[in-house]
Length: 487
Image (cartoon, rainbow, N blue to C red; front, top):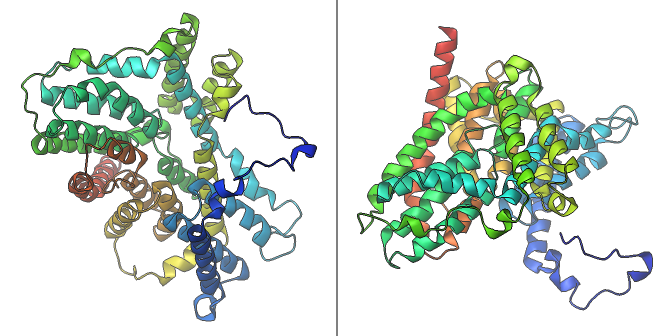
């Protein structure tokens, strides 16, 4: 958003520029048709007596909201974050009336909007603020170039350095921003390679893959992680920042190693040495213009915040509460001004909030229990159930937002495994980061694809391997942890 945009007063409404309505998404007949089709299908499901005969009125309305949201997420009729906002609005209208099918008092509707202040939303907001501070001062670029410079100039080592730096940064910075930054760092190196050199394709694929896998490694690495933690909290469970790293980081590192090996074999370099000195490491001109004290403030804030996140089980400060450290320090010191705050990923926060609200409603109305009763899972063991849900997540996440897929599947999966919710919720979240078979599957994939030096078949070949291995590795590691804890 441009901070220089003029305010529009009440007398300015008639001065609408020509083509204004033509620029709106709703001007697309195809999008309108898809939206109306999703609405009609959702109403048909919710009003069909044979489907809803055993549902309470509240659960029936929750079913309509769930099906409508899921269909909009899958089809992309409106932006994913807008679906999250729509979910909250529909909950207020359909379930918030005092003395109605769900709400009892005039204040009960407030629970639907209170989710905006959910601790996990603030946790992600803190992560966004910290990432913005790192970008403004060039700390993220400095860390990336510093890591890359330690891996020499041999093709295999350079690929490992690129993927390692991308992986580490995407644990704490948006994987989209990380991928964009790493691709920018690699421009000089890519320019020095022949147009048909397969190694260039391997580097691009490595950036996208490492950015996706890095999201598994920390609680703030990917929204599905927060969704799983939020659902587990509703069932009486809690996972700290460090505990998530224990669960998610080892599988992510193993998958990263597999991806590095496969990319190195499939896309070998034609050179024994690479001109890595030319790739333009170090802070950019904008970062070097930042005062030194700002870089010190951001660096100190990063160390303090991550340190407290990793040690929350000892000092007792909740992970979400720690996120206020970067929020407060970087704004009150002026490191981040109003323009920088306006530029944060608010859409992700609203998508996350809408997903949390949807999961809460699906659970509290009894809809999740009803859905589980309709599924043919009777007699299915815990491990096969977790595996089925995890692989389903991978499939869905290749065609829709992995956050949206987690919003739908995590509450249902947790209800299927009462008493063992972590066995299903966590694998679903980790599996969501393993869906990368298509250019549209994740933003990092799309950024790499946009360079024109990588094809859809490249994503499919590696994505199929990681999509199959990811859930299996995650479940195996969780089983190892469970055995170690019980033993």
